[in-house]
Amino acid sequence: MVMVQGTFDDLGTPLPEVTFVVVDLETTGGSPHECGITEVGAVKVRGGEVVGELQTLVNPGAPIPAFISVLTGITDAMVADAPPIETVLPQFLEFASGSVLVAHNARFDVSFLKAAAQRCDREWPPLQVLDTVHLARQVVRRDEVPNHRLGSLARLFHATTTPDHRALHDARATVDVLHGLIERVGNLGVHSLEELLDYTARVSPHRRRKRHLADGLPDAPGVYLFKDGQGRVLYVGTSVSIRTRVRSYFTASEHRRRMGEMVRLAESVSPVVCATTLEAEVRELRLIAEHKPRYNRRSRHPEKALWVKLTVEPFPRLSIVRRVADDGARYVGPFGSRQAAEAAVAAVHEVLPLRQCTERLSPARPRPACALAEMGRCGAPCTGAQGVDDYAAVVDRAALLLAGDRRDLLVALRERMARLSEAERFEDAQTVRDRLVALVRGATRSQRLDPLARIAELVAARRSPTGGWEVVCVRHGRLAGSTTSPRGADPMPYIQALRASAEVVAPPVPPATAATAEESEKVLRWLESPGVRVVDVDGDWTCPVGGAAAVREELEPLETSRRRTAGFAGAR
Image (cartoon, rainbow, N blue to C red; front, side, top):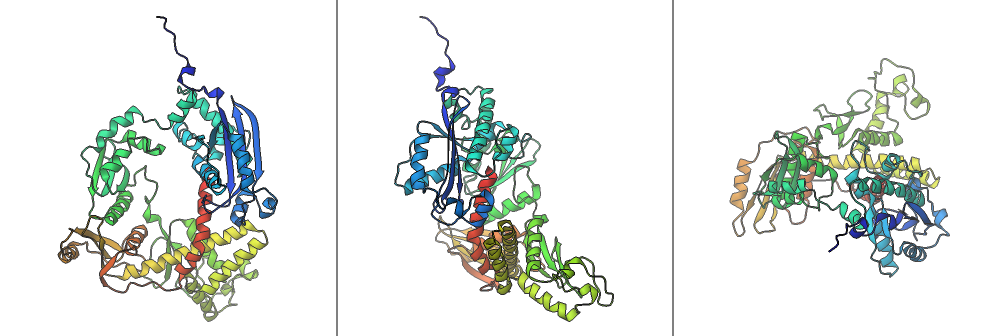
């Protein structure tokens, strides 16, 4: 028998023989079932050479939101005479036939194409899909790029085209990124299409060996802490089943690169079983804030939350502070970042001539006017041109605006945003919108947290999925304890025991609660969820009708669409 040494061809289709079609879409938003495609760009490559390109604008059949036009440069006028997706999709599918479809954040692009095929009553072909984001996370180190967005990777691989949110340009940049990634995995022994598609699904032997860390963990709701060999907390998570969730970190279902790094360092997992899902969520927040694990990205620094304060002095002004003090001032917030707090302050200054200088002014010691006074954006109390009583009227309006109770001023901000959009000053309109959203969110948060902060004790319950009741005790906005009663048992003895053993919580200075804002908001969401019954409340639990929350409900659909699109743009 003659032995013949195998070649790479025996392993599958060699990569130089594979035809890739790299596609990029521009859309009117982030939801494939609610938004339309405005542009398709595709590049066909084989053996490292471009063999064809496809580019066309698409009429989405609906107006393009202003912020989308700012992002992509595509306007309603540009797509007015463009073909609809019913015409474009067959052309694209013919162009992509028999190839491997490639996209940066492929889930986004493919979901829009599949939704378009469904609307066109066409069957989606069985195309193989390669996601360059997913591949880049496997082979591009964190010290090489700040993130895996298309722009960052294009710079790393010296792409000949700079991505700019136009479909063909981004597709061309993705081609260069694809070639750079293929070169890297080639050095790792990946030489065929089959090996390339399987590469990102691989589970390293080292990760498999860590599966024993899940042995003995409880099949119960709670919190889990991954720790290194020195007992330092690497990551904190929560799940309805600790054992099942921890096991998933050692399988191919876990694709996050930072989690792979975390698992390599982990030497043990500590479980914390919780009586209720709310308790698990709250414990997770507290443990993250306490340990600040390097692999948790959110909730690590609740102490950095900021408040906007309307000061108490003869000529009050707005100030950004870290704590709510018992000083008689009005506070709004908290805000998750200084940028959001500054945006809320700027929103007030957009419609009210409140002074912006930081000096403490005295009616008895006038000073020269500043540029804002000369522009008419301040009544110039510093010069004596505006007295304490006249300025107090402006302060009263500012206080109501911060509370979200001056709808006329909120409407004025929306009208200003609309006028800027009509004048095609889209960036200015976006700035005003961001400021308005920041102000309304801060006011909504204050209105929701303030009553909870004043309630000495609130006990509520809801049916458990397994029977019985989940019971929580909240004191001044802080989860003081939780318990469950068994199916068929009288819950009242369990409630009485919970109240007797719950944490003693000192009253805070409203609108701040006795917990972090994130914890109190989780508590509020639980209390407002379907099926929850209030057992007893020591205080008044109210929220004003038609306050900031009503304005926020009007703004949220637009903001949600913008955030989805920003997230898509960020991934690229």
